[in-house]
Image 1: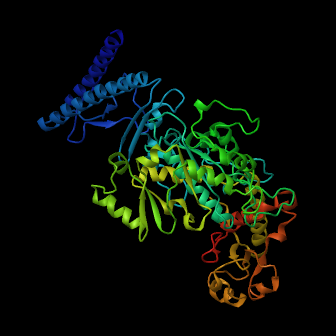
Image 2: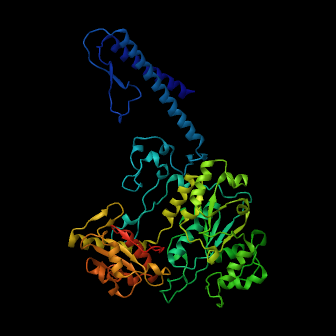
Length: 568
């Protein structure tokens, strides 16, 4: 009540001040305008003064029309002052009411938050003069203004740590994510039982980039379903067996999957942790665990085999640690979707899930799904999948491979949700810093040489690219015979893209350097082994080399690759 009385007195003082100034203007004015703004649009008026000032005028009297304009100005100013005060106190009240709570409003593509004390202050979401400027984390040559990129609010550009040279331009991710992403909750997660649900999968049997793409699909599926992702046991991965001392590898050797922010959206555990928690038998101590706390018991005929392979395994059927011993257990106790990346597309739609229907009433949604899936048959996320305790994807088997980028296999009918999961992968599924550091040293050496010899400069100041160009020439184990073309054909097919004497960085599995002579006649060629000492490759995991090369190649002024290699 006291605050209300105080506010009333201030408003009356403001009204008197405004009335006094306009009264003066009404007795001393010309045919021109009566008032002008005292301050620029970036300056704020004080609470006890009018935002208008009298223009000095001759002593001529105002006509009736001018006096009417003066009265309109007075009423507008009074209304602004009164409205501004009410808006200010309204937001104060809302802030107090939402101090320990979260108000989440969603309607199609619109989300808004009143955050708790651990979240950003309310003014972060209000309109400001900076809304027409790009957010510091925005990317690209023409980034959108902040008012069109609300998901960037609170986000910062990522950094690459512990590298002797500045490598941060290579960091294409945000760390942390924006406030919207930090507080995002999937509408497809089941909360009926209150118990943990799981998603398991098998690594693809192809090369590293096939394995990586398949794994990214699993992360998005687990996150969208609100499930804990169970990683496969460490195992020999195709073409990643360069370290004789340790042939079994897992995804954590290349990605940091244990960050707090990623775990908030998709908890990730090992197969061994899963078995110990949910298997019904502590296979290490061979003592019974609390069966009532465990959802999925290992059947008796699987117990010995699961124990042997839960930490590491091999794909060889005759091996004592054959991975199938664990995967067969998953298939028996879990729900196994019948999906294939080339035959199916996976649809997340809130209407279809809630109504258990695959026919959407919105024709635009139906058309969008048809366009996305093309010839593929749509598989909808449904209540059966939602309620299953464990879902297992047989992605190592030929008839169940998901050899797609996640954004070409998984479709969310809500663009807001779809864009969130794209940002989730971008911001969290990137290689360890040591890989980017080594790549940055090579890129720096290439750019320095290009500038000193020929005056070539970076063409991508934001991403640290240019100053050289790059190629991927796949030769060795490539199954597409028609793609194995000669060195002369490589030159003829690409010569229009390169500048004279340009440095070309070539990533390849071709060991015979004479193959590249048609290119070497016109350009300066560089390969990974030219930078063994510069990048300190001998001190790194030898399995990192292909990943380092992919980062280097991605920063070329122009990149030409091999179709349809997943590395390219």
